[in-house]
Image (tube, rainbow, N blue to C red):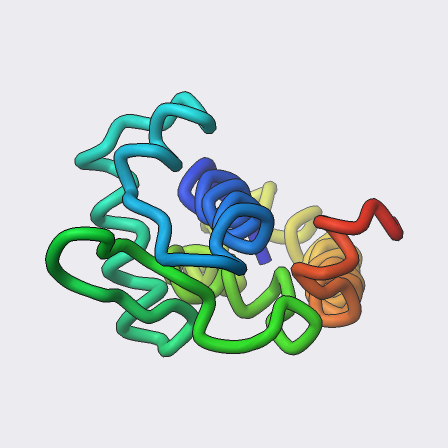
Amino acid sequence: MRISTKGRHAVMAMVDLARHGAEKPVPLAEVAQRQAISLSYLEQLVAKLKKQGLVKSTRGPGGGYVLAFDASLITIQQIVVAVDTSSQRDKNAAPQGEGQTARKLTDSLWQKVSEELQKYLKSVTLADVVQRRI
């Protein structure tokens, strides 16, 4: 599992929605400004989060986005995977030649690191981050 910039920015946006979206929907322009993220980039990320059912939108005056579920029910792993398909294990073929042996020897190490990271991110909820319990 890899955590890209997309994944980090999506988590930042979701934390912002969790903090500011309890009372009313939050316009993405406000999130973009508070988090110093390009609005067009944020729109792309939130579209993916919405497609995965993690956020809901409201149109019109006073519209914006809110979490689709309580923050305690959304894991960081769900957010990262929703926006970044490359967060899955890299499945490129092993290189040919001498390096192949070293790669075979280290593949299990990196696979285990990836599994532990994924397990940890599954155990941390959005509420944990917002409430600084990590």
